[in-house]
Length: 90
Length: 200
Length: 263
View 1: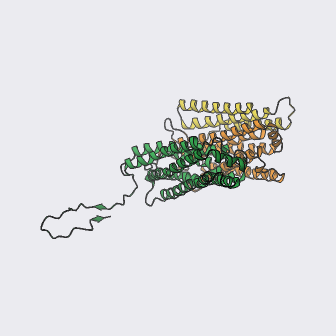
View 2: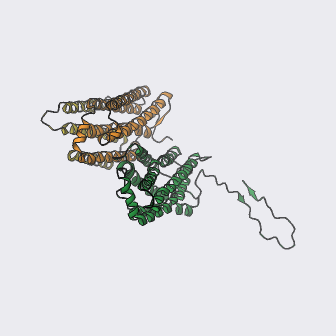
């Protein structure tokens, strides 16, 4: 049985690992001119990328309707915006 | 029940997506939505409390180990990646590969649990307990609730692994639900890391 | 399953919520709650000043709470539709429900006593009664969480064709059980979100529980509409009675049949 060897999963993982590593470095070596929130924002970017990857993976497999995809995407973005907003406001 | 069953190991059948099928079933997404709302409420409460005492929270946050937090993030990201691989293997009826990936995901999950235990042991050693109030309540409570989710996730992975080993078929829905739960456990941790470890 | 009766029992759920809310919001008006950081004198003063409205509030709440029993019983019966043979999950639900109702009712005793003798006993006594009530109200959340979890697991473990309640509701209920369970941690905290006046230990579990109740009522109501007149799997244990004439015809000496029961 032919196996799909799409590198997408690996690439996403690598990107997430890189973003996480950068954010931890940014956090630890605070004097980069940015206030402490930069690291947090990077991690939220990690969350966004990850959530998108999961949604992509699942929507593809399930052949879900376009409406469902859009709905999930909107909900996700809205929710992440909320968390991000709380984060920035706090 | 022939509908949506992954007859993993049986050469004839693969996943047959019905039109408009919700992957994993509606139930798991509802569970995750409610769960996320709950954690968002926890983070919101954290933000509100932090707004009252920013210096105390910032000082407390300075004592937690961001490096270990970062390591834990990497552990869960990798566990999530491997679980995604496992699901793909299941879709292609590659039972042994799926079993190996599931085991790897569980091992990374266990590593997370051990790392967390060590992190907490060190914190408690430094005299920071949940009773210290303020920041630490959230640190331990959010961490604890998340840890509970990880343990549940490990049980789910173990169950899937067992089905792979014994040659039983797994409902496609159940496998997808289990793996998406694991993804969300990872996502929750990322948000926890951002809010509690990095935000203050 | 007699649909009208089951529906009547389900209706007691929203009724309970309504009366409870009136008792809390109009009676005791505990928003915010007199919490662990308040001194004994301050708490006792509250009881003295608001004695009557507190007593009205407690009375309304203690009247409302037993309504949980028929509601929970209806829910257990509807969920039983998925169980073959001995309904152990339904039994577990009923036992837990009884425990919950028992706790929920008795917890008003210390509060009522505190208001009853407010000003006549020492402030410490009033304060202790007040806190006893709170510990009983919140610390005893495990049977509630377990009740909801058992209901959820029962739904998930039953065959889809036979279970009247939808599976998504089971997942929602599992999440709900997770959200209310941490309330048991109140004994470790006197301030913060996990104290008995805290957001995570009181408000979130309390409000989410009542929301869950209303969702459950709607879901169960629809299930009753959808379900068969006799739920599949539910064995009707009433013996079939062969109708016997009540009155013997004049002149007959044949004895009335007494064992017209089979099954």
